Image 1: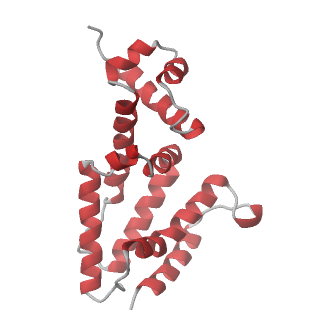
Image 2: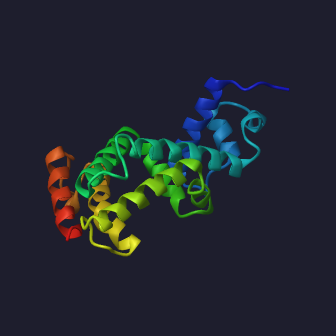
Image 3: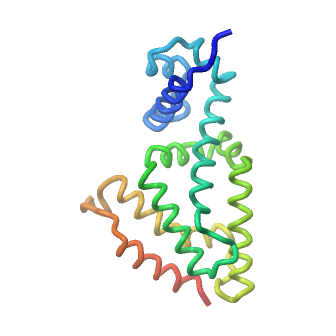
Length: 197
């Protein structure tokens, strides 16, 4: 039986992410991945049962990395302003440091693979922390009660829009765009006005 090579495994993960982001999940195959890694297809099966197993494991790894980073220095007991600001800072830092992983997560989010990521322990902990945070903020009269999708759109939509502008290097109308702390802070202050009683 052949043994696992951690360097080769890292290469497989890196190339799989690149291929899925570049070509999409539907076009991704074990043959393309093996060719990109300059290894045999049989080598991939040392690490993964099949294509679905590979995609799910990589998606969970990327998802858990994000979920862990999102709760650094965050507590569900924080004031709404401080907790939301911490979320913005953590999410922005992750997106700036790992843009390809963010693209992978976005590509997988609305697929059956995305559903598997959302059942990971990392996501369940992350979800529990955010649910408790919003319940506390509503109970403390720091947050207007809204349907979840409306809340998320207002609370995080502006941040993710600016992160997309940053990733593309341009804003509306093709104007050059660079994300700064001043722009983040200005958008955050507008979000607070919209969400607080």
